[in-house]
Structures are given as structure tokens and as C-alpha cells.
Image (tube, rainbow, N blue to C red):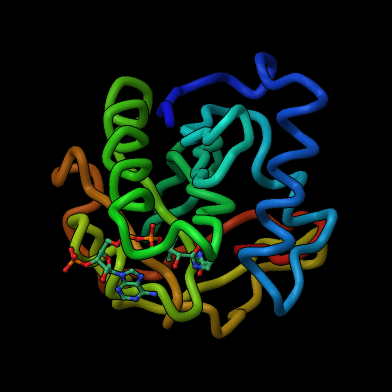
Length: 176
Ligand SMILES: CC(C)(COP(=O)(O)OP(=O)(O)OC[C@H]1O[C@@H](n2cnc3c(N)ncnc32)[C@H](O)[C@@H]1OP(=O)(O)O)[C@@H](O)C(=O)NCCC(=O)NCCS
């Protein structure tokens, strides 16, 4: 097995196909084409076994508003370990390397999760405590997504208060 960090532009067709197969296995409730598109455009960390990806996480730049101020932050996407390889530290290893990659590029990272809050808390992530909104072409609307939102504060001064409103820009598929 090896663990590598690669830019999206460096992922060849076979690797992208392998990642899609990994995500389809890891998210049996459904992993959409939009979810896949959201994972590209930044930096990936993957663990490969015999050349096939068995664990992955990526971070892409996104504009997020914290209280009154917009910042470009890392947004973590498509975190997955192949079901046959879970519980052996691969997810943690991938995230720890991704934290290093993020730290060299962005002051803060965010993500949205359903059931893996505890996995991220062990890694230093904090739950968002304010209300979440999505900015759409027709206005900024409360979206009720705050319970799944988490933040990793590499620079704690950038977002000192986790209770303020947080706003993302709308996109195809899930906004957060
Ligand atoms: C969440 C996931 C990536 C974890 O991968 P993994 O390789 O099994 O994780 P690790 O073995 O590195 O576990 C690291 C720690 O997190 C814990 N952990 C793993 N999954 C967890 C979860 N869903 N909730 C809470 N804690 C979890 C482990 O028990 C371990 O704890 P320890 O430090 O006390 O030993 C994997 O279960 C997965 O692919 N799930 C389906 C897809 C998913 O939910 N992705 C995240 C959504 S944003």
C-alpha cells in the first residue's frame, strides 16, 4: 500500500474510475455525479492497494461567509475507506496528510457529514454552532444544514466564534 497526495489534474482516467468505484461502495445510500464533481478541483490524498484506491479524501477551495466576512477556505469532500479496509487507521492517515496539504494552502477547512462526526472530532474538527445558509441567485436562505457542518481551524483567529451565521454559495447537487 502507498499513500500519496496529488492534484486533481494529476489523476489519470484509471484512477478517476477507481475512485468512482470506491465512492459507490463506500456510500451505499448513493453517491451522485454532482458529489463526484465536488471532489475535484483541488488536492487529493489516496491510499492505493495494488494500484487501486482504497481510501480517499480531497480538499477544494470554496468561498464561505463567516458572520459578515467571506473567506476562501478548504472544503473537504468524498472522504471514504473501502469497506474491506475500514477500522485499520486508513481514514485517519488520509485525513492527517490532507490536514498538512490544507495547512500549506488555506487557513480553515470545512466539511459536511452525516454520521461521521466522531471520526472528525478525533482529528481536531469542531462542530459548527451557528445557523447555516445558502446564497442563491434569488437570495440567501436558511438551509438547516448546520448540524452536519464541521470546521478545522488551522488559524483560530480567522473564525474566532463558531456561533455566527455561516453561508455557502449554491452549486449543483448538495450545497454543503
Ligand atoms: C468514516 C470512514 C472514512 C472511516 O474510515 P476508517 O478507515 O475506517 O477510519 P479509521 O480506521 O482511520 O478510524 C479512525 C478513528 O475514527 C473512528 N471512527 C471511524 N469511523 C467512525 C464513525 N463513522 N464515527 C465515529 N468514529 C469513527 C475509529 O473507531 C477510530 O477511532 P480510534 O482513534 O479511537 O481508534 C469510513 O467508515 C467510511 O468510508 N464510511 C462511509 C463513508 C463516510 O461516511 N464518509 C464520511 C462522510 S463525510
